[in-house]
Length: 341
Image (cartoon, rainbow, N blue to C red):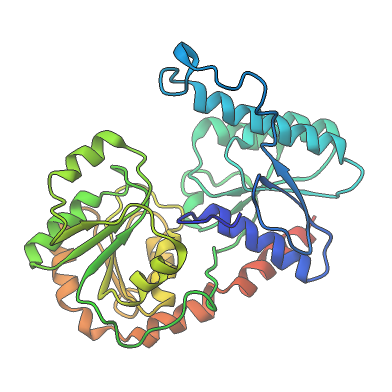
């Protein structure tokens, strides 16, 4: 934290730690090895002795053993749990941004420490049942996340942020291209962005880490390097440049999007967003002012919206972010939530 390339949750947790420490709170940050230090106390996770068993491969290699990545993640979770035990007299509350949140609940009950879970991913019935039983404090990153789970112990909704000093405003983009950044997966629906670009005869730039290899193999048939261009994962400043010079940011997601950090990154740079209305999209994009919110799976509607994008003022996109999604506003939201308990 922060991530060297693309990454959402890592930035949010970093700004939580930095922002709360800057306000004078005593913060202990448990984060992956290689994270950036600051006014907070950084404890790096993943420092295991790599010399033990070094060089062993064969049938035990990660490529062959399907569960290895899950097992390695469990090792890191165990390290975090041990640190929570070792440091139990040095903190008052635990603010969790990690997936795997359920494993912490019995431990924090034993430690008698308030546990606040930030929902960066959607809720689901089994997890919600555990939260309800344990009366876990939950912070959602949009109101849409609460749909279907109204009875949990919600502490606050705190919208994600974007660093407006890093994502700077560009009133006149140099490019005439469409842009879509995000994890490559069917739920993100890059295929729809490709079809929209082709029907409009416009260039599309795609970027993001590949989660679904099979889906990416399907997309590759359409990626010609000319009209449809694949940039893999972008370095940070290259990503900002891509946002600043895009004509439109496309977000045709087909899942219940918890927030959509890439949208406020784009708008901070002045680029309007055209997105399907799933999950938190209507909370983030102001339809007709900072872009267009289209009925889900309505690719014709998305094509028409791109054609109307000249009616959107890039300054309005920037102003919307400055009013609602700054680092300072998010950090204050977490401070107020934590003070409740």
